[in-house]
Length: 210
Image 1: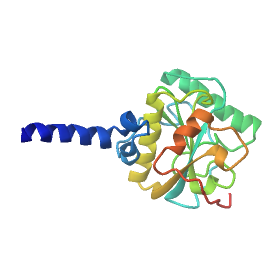
Image 2: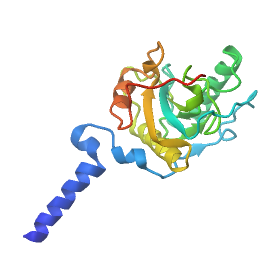
Image 3: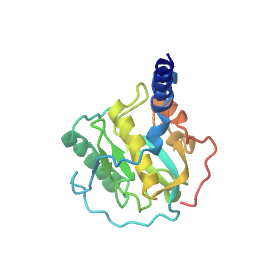
């Protein structure tokens, strides 16, 4: 009987702490401390244009992660299509906006891959007032009416955890959604609801100078 009770207790602890999203409908806390490296596609891997220059982040490890969505109903579930969309983002940011490179530090597809934008070291052009002290992460698609799929959300959590483990994101980091700090609908209503449930979400972010 004692063995049976111990088994029941073990299963309960596993469900409660390892898979809380199945019990409470919340994101998995442990995904945010995961040190496993996500699958990151290099700039060469998605055939990026050369950047016109980069500026080193002023605050490292960065205290903030800013979550975005692409904002258009372009979705992708394989590396080839995701790479095409990431190239279209870069072309728009550089050719239309006149930016030095794609604005985001990283871009995530619903194929579960992470696409390297400006990377861990360089200031992005994604969130005025937070560019110099944050990592900007964009999930490809429009998430006003639905969440990104499980592969994309796992990649988001894994990327943040990996950034912490490698010293690029501060252990005491906070997550914010783009709409919290500027007038925009980004990252979409459904993704914003998800971001607010993340353990390191804050409703009181502090601006940088860039």
